[in-house]
Image (cartoon, rainbow, N blue to C red; front, side):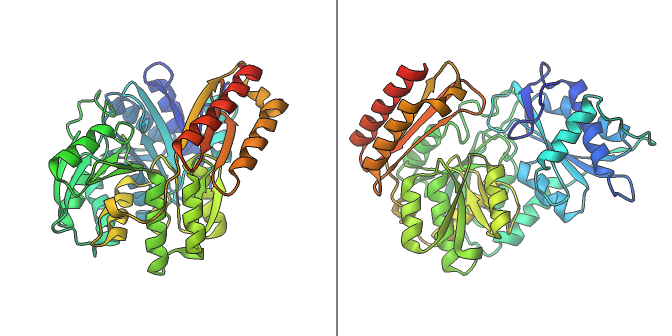
Length: 441
């Protein structure tokens, strides 16, 4: 049996790969693992985003939970971080989120969170897979129940209010893009409660329009509307609400690197940055590292993926980390990317300031090219490629950087270059891409 879990749960085309049968099997297997050491039947929270396949998969998951003797609590549409928060707050044994994040509506996914609010470990995923494959047999138990959990959205809003209740947004004109996804109700509501003058787009989900030309992967339309409409700031969430990008009043897009830099400086200046450190990935802009060095903030670098960022934060006892894509984690609030919380943290960090006049970091020009190759594994032994990387890296030392790595899922080699100006960035990238194409394509 091929591995089911990827970097962010089980994900694929709904009804083809991710069928109701597979969802039921996953619910049953995950609940079986939740029985370990549990004195009573496991309580399992299930939430979803707005895709048309969500209700089918939610029902199948719940059936699997009940078949394994657990009690399924249906929280309805809720951002992914809401599941992590409520699981910790109410001592649930497990949470399942039905979502494919920023993917098109035809895809869906299932990811599991443990009672600590964090994604379940690789070892637990392997055990779930073994149970689904029939390599391990679940125990026979009386069936559990399936019940609606009313007010999950309100509970999540209260957690946001507890964290950001001191934030006064009166006088701020804010435009939100909710991607027709899981934030479409809670995001506008929390901004209104904090006093902002809020307008929101992409808040009419129909099951198929999630992420469709909107949200954090299509932020250009939001940028145009912010600038044209005289808004102070805009935020774009993705389909499940665990990431965010910002737009300043001029329409300039502000990515996760800049938002993490702003948050790091704010939290350090207010004495709330544990360890005076921050964790980011290998994709983070070189300008971020320069700004943090100047500010005396230590930076840890991880592989791509919010799972790796969180693991590094926990290992070091730090509280802030994130990715360029807009996954931003403040562990003091929730051990998960939370787009709404990150947006509010941005406004908290700005105070009375203007995002258009931000001073967190100077972002270097960046160029990323995906080169299709015969075998991505051949990159490791491609001596000419690594010689070229060494030459270009040496020329950019102290001014920029080069990153060449294989894709984790496709026959691609990713070539990324950051340099002080656009022309040099393009030239270095072109030279490296030529070597990769010559030797590996």
